[in-house]
Image (cartoon, rainbow, N blue to C red; front, side, top):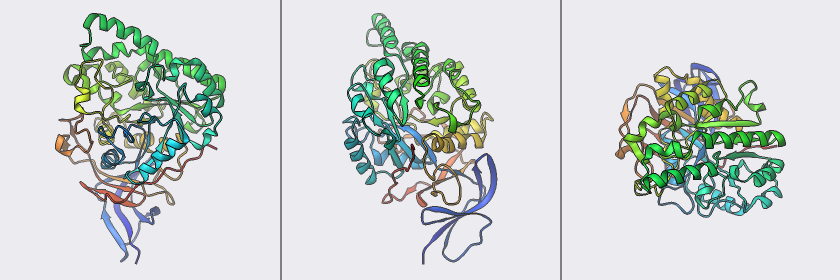
Length: 448
């Protein structure tokens, strides 16, 4: 007899509503939502007093597989993801090798099919080396193309510094173009000035002066102007400044937007006040900036100029982080704790549960045209996260699941806890226990 999962009496947060109901899961999908009687073949999960969200879709992660697996891999980081309520992710192309061809992209999907506990998709990398090949390709077959992280391979790989490459791409690409928006020319000038004063030992607190608001704004403004010229679909990754938020609109639905943006959780959580305490551990590119910027990003998220929330999850070993400024790697792990962070903002009255679900679940599915995910709807995949909003716990090394073994959030006490995570109808995470022989699926999407 086939077993069905029945989640009873949970408080569902979905499509702008909060209500108590039962959900019946069968064969990987949500079969029924309502007041459902218990039958003999039902595995019953009591959701009383808990909140049920659609599984989070994190549209920007760096899981390091292949080639950089000493930092993290598709198994370890997806495991951390599902423990944090993330059921699907889109991974960036700056692995080794860089994912610059359809062949390398296919190989990455193969790796994920045998390692990832969450559902997965991957950006194709784009830079000056492969632009001519990309514009000859039917780019609608890709969920998106991106230059993010490729500047670690060599200077000059950011699209923002290559007007000719950008022009070609924006004129020809039929998928989302997701770019890292900083002007390296401005950054390099700032680096030189601080190197002359401090040598290699630049204090971490000057990171937002080096990777400055000006460098972000100039790159974003130029990219938007170019996208408008070619009617391209542009997505600005990890926005960090208040001034940039005014370049984006909120007067049309997301489905109609051609130019979109996101905020990563750490740019809402940290500010320049935290550099003295955490140093290089919060060195990200683009940089964590001022309290004013942090507050401006949250305002823009709430009024829909910012469309989605991501993590830019980017694990490095502690040794790679604890170097002098110019040697310290940029990025940090966040995917296990992103939903917890946002629920702390809810706890403080700064955002509603409905808005969190909109930005972390619904809108990622809309933006990347993901099929049958991101919502709690009958007929959709049962990607679900059951959360206790009244369960206090503290981030510590012993409860971290990142392969790198550290987090800038260590010592942080959260007031909510992910209890169970369902991926494609399977209970993959259950209060600290994992079903590690059940793997996620490639994300279906449509760029047509």
